[in-house]
Each structure stands twice: as structure tokens, then as C-alpha cells.
Length: 126
Image (cartoon, rainbow, N blue to C red; front, side, top):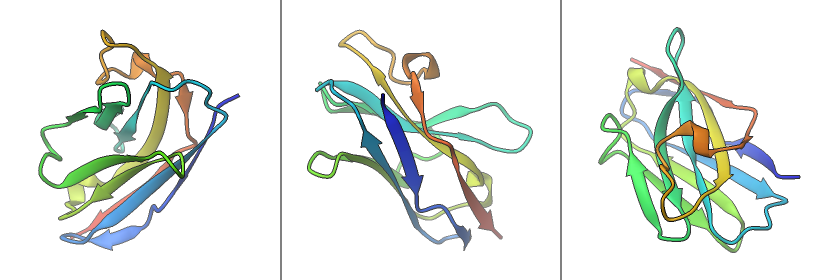
């Protein structure tokens, strides 16, 4: 059974940085999708940054390009999200997710992900 445990959420001022980390337990597949999604109050969940380990390709939402970086630490089996130059609109609950993917998977779609973390709050104040 795959279990995802997120950490690193906090309240920061605009312009600041945070690093989210997600520990992945129980995964037995070598190539998977992994990524971060977020849900702001009153809005639908959206993909923020995702990747497929088989190709090392990544996806970033337009709103975070150039500010956020997703990475996979193979040794620690974590997926991390470095968030710089944070804006108030980055506020929300951030979810880590993984799923079995292949070369043809749409890594931007949450339908590809069948394991989710409990969510962690990120608040950016102006």
C-alpha cells in the first residue's frame, strides 16, 4: 500500500520561499508519475508541478513557471517542490500524488494519480 506523507507547509510573506517534501512509502514500481496539486479556497484542484520518472519530463502550471521546481530524490524516495517568490495567489492546500504512468500518460491530469497525501497548508500573506 502506497502512503504519501507531506511536510514543509507554512505561512510566509509574499516574496518568500518554501520547500515542500513528500515521502513516498510502499511504491514498488520504478517508473511513476509524481507531483504536486493544490486547491485554493473556492476553487477546483489544479496541477502545479508534475513529472514522470521514466522520462524525467516535467510539467508546470503557467502561474508557477520560473518560480517553482519539482525534483525527485531517488535515494530518499521523496518528491520535493521548491517554491520561490511566493505570491498570495499561491495560497492553498497542496497535495502530493503518485500514480502508475507510462509513456503515453497525461501527467498533467489528476486522473493519472491514484495515491494522494493528506494535504498541507501553504499560506502566503501580502
